[in-house]
Structure formats: structure tokens, C-alpha cells
Length: 249
Image (cartoon, rainbow, N blue to C red; front, side, top):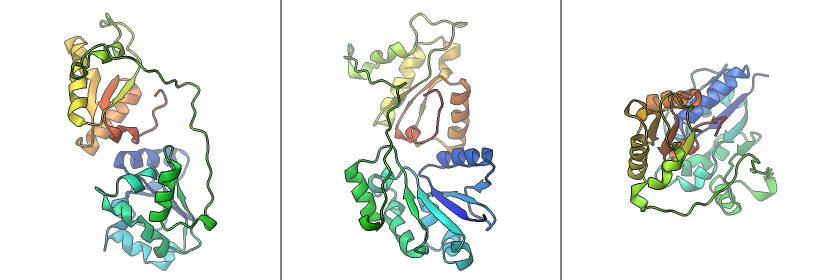
């Protein structure tokens, strides 16, 4: 009782959703630390590793650190993959020397290969003799992999037309929700514009693009719109892949 758990998350929106999930479970959580009486702290790598920050001062406060019962690094594959453009990921290993040795550190990821795990453990200064690995299947029986041969040119995006039911008109049930992932923001935008043209003009805002250039406010609003069915689908980058838990996707 009274213990504090720290969760690092790569995206602000993901942190917001984790906060809401904890609140529904009766656990008070914040995305920025302000006092000792919160049981869960959800924070980005930049916030937790920023030199001379308020959070760094907390980590040097014995009263605060004595209450920490766990540190969870969510989406841990980012530790190995994102260090070049988010250098604070490369600094997370310092937590091992900042926190009491009794504080367990857990890394969590659904896409962590053995090779990446080895790299992450090296960056975090985690030793194999003190490491417990728990692997669970990521298989979902309701998901299937389908490969379609492209019929049209790559830059036409016409092979995506199946996502909008042929002949769809206002008054018909909406098509199933969808996410289309791209490596390039401009390609995602062009794909979304193509699908918008497949719809009546007044319904074209049901398909949108989503990427890291969007504001946090826009992302939060669109997440709600997607869950509620106001938006049907996105052409997006990996920025949406770690954003949230969408029950119907």
C-alpha cells in the first residue's frame, strides 16, 4: 500500500489512455509528477531522463525513491530502435544506477525479437543472471494474414478501393474500420485522399490521415472519433500503431 509504479511510454496519447485505464481500475495516475501521493506515474523517456528536471530531482529524493515498487518500460523495442532520434532512450539505462537496487524493472513489448531483447538488455544494463523472461503468444484467432496481388500502379492507391464497399451510398451501414500503415507520411496522405474520393463529398471526412505531425489535441480527438465510429479509417504511420487499444481492430 502506498507504493508507486512508474510507467514510461513513447507517446503522449498512449500515456493518456493508460491513465484513463488506471482511473477506471480505481488507481489514481498522472502523466506529470507533482506529489508523492499518486500510485502510478506515466511519463515519457524525455521527461524521466531530462537533466535538471523536476522529475530528476524526485529521483534523487530518498523519500520518493523508497516508495517506488516497480518501473515498467512499455513498447520496449523503441529503446533499441528510436535512440538515434530520441536520444533519451539511450539514457534509460541510467535508471539502474539511480534507483534502489531492490526496484524491479520490467520491459514490455509485443514485437520484441530475441536479437532486439539482447540489445535492449545491454542498453539497460540488465544482466542475464538476474533476468526473468516471460513470453506469451501474440496469436489472435480473430486475425488472419492475407496477401493480395496488386492490380494497379503503386502510386494510384486503387488497390485500396476494397476498403470502401463498392456502390456504398449514404444510408448504408458503414464499412468495417480500417488502418493502413505506410513508411512515408506523404504516401499515407495521398492514399487517404484517394479513399476520400471514393465516397460522396459529404462523407469524405470519414477517412483521414494520422501521423506524428498532428497535434496531441488532434490525436486525442481522433482516437475518440475512431472508437465511436465517427471516423472509419486512417492512412497512418507507426505513430498510430502504439497509440491505443482499439477493441474492434
